[in-house]
Amino acid sequence: MLSIELADGRTICADKIVAMRTYLGLIEGVPNDRVNEWTIDDFKSYCGRAFCIDRFGVLPPAMKAREFKGRSWRALPANAIGGLFRSVRTVRDHDKTYSILAILWFQDELEPLLSPPVLAQLRQIEWARLAEDVDD
Image (cartoon, one colour):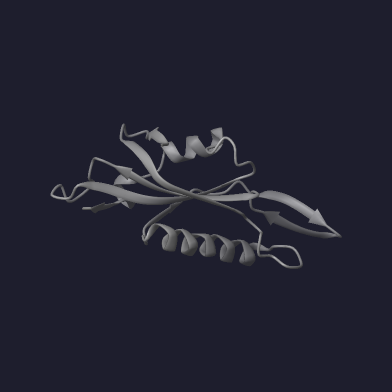
């Protein structure tokens, strides 16, 4: 599927990918910082259920200044994308089979799946600190 070499030389592969429109559930009004925090937490929860995992890395989204009817806010990119990634190299417990980490990111377009700025961020993720060692 999707394979990425991280800055530390580790290769990670995506086992699952999910994507949703960021403000799909927003019925009225404009988002504010609190709504954006809730949105990120909701996507973490959704991905946690989809991937059966609690450990996450969230790449900082590139917020955009927006204005509508005289109200200003900072908007998340249009799409939230989550991936369950695996590395055959463990990080702490070398008796385990591999390490995993769910990673959540935001970008305006769905293609490419990893925009160049997001890919650059993803390559810098602190896998050894965030990932969990597991067995099948």
